[in-house]
Image 1 (cartoon, rainbow, N blue to C red):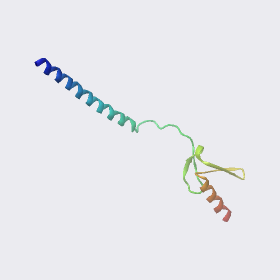
Image 2: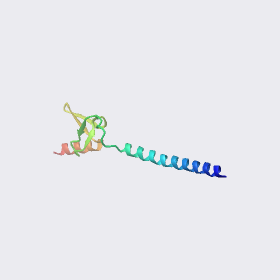
Image 3: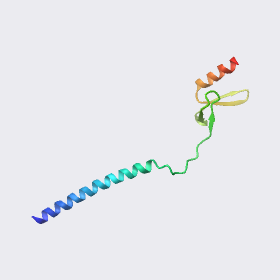
Image 4: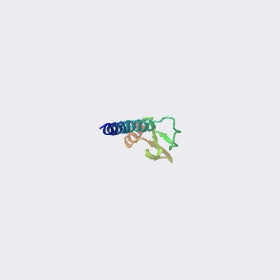
Length: 89
């Protein structure tokens, strides 16, 4: 009877140990996911929209060429607003 009790206690301790280790691993994964001390990755150049003054990545910007000059916009709407304001001036 005593051996049976010892085996049950050992199994219960093992299950508790596995549960604790599962929660510890989950917390460590969350902590590394939000690590801020990493070196910033090199990204692409940002360009400023001349109408709304926001910065957008060059690859995602709306490009318009006018008089041999390239101008980058955050969207087609900003480009249209810029052109309509430019024509009125």
